[in-house]
Length: 216
Image (cartoon, rainbow, N blue to C red; front, side, top):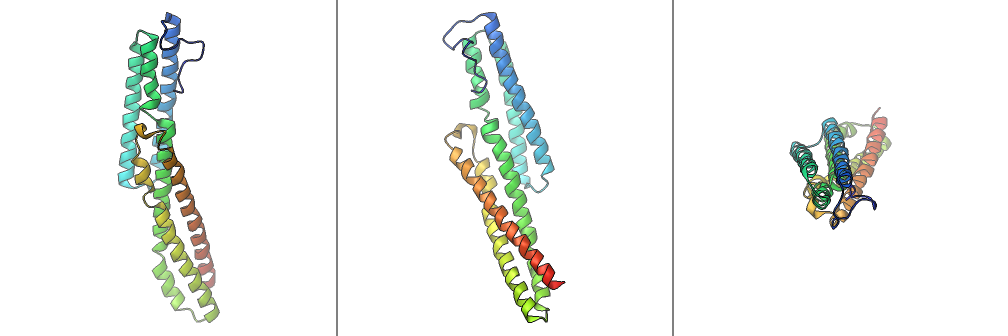
């Protein structure tokens, strides 16, 4: 684990002095504290992302609470351990049972990005009927054709963006610490979908700007 003792500290098979045991306990305490700070930061990040779905927000909030409580319990256990062997074994669960950096952090950011992107795509797509009405009323044939082409592309791009974002949150929130690091490839694949959605949305917004200019 990240908090494992340095080479100068005792290994699990050795007896240890009081100072060595104190060192192990201090290391575990430090790494738990760092993760608690990260969980607090993730909680603030989630609160600021107002377009995360209610279901995903509830799941993430539950994970934050469970991990914070679990980490505190591990730290308390380690601080009460009387041998280095036990303290090290208990301390390793800080990483293996609570994948804060490997899992919880990317889960939070991917859910926030995909849910926010999906909301944006749906909002932009909802403007299409009104834009179509305005385009139908245009009298300049050249501008009308250009505006229609832009709207057709906007519709295609928002549909593509919605498809890219769809399911990302459910996929990453379906992962648990025991899945890691074997499921790392899943976390690697999902950001590509989010990026594809962003690319499609950038193109759709450009189309919207083109239409606005032609309608002016």
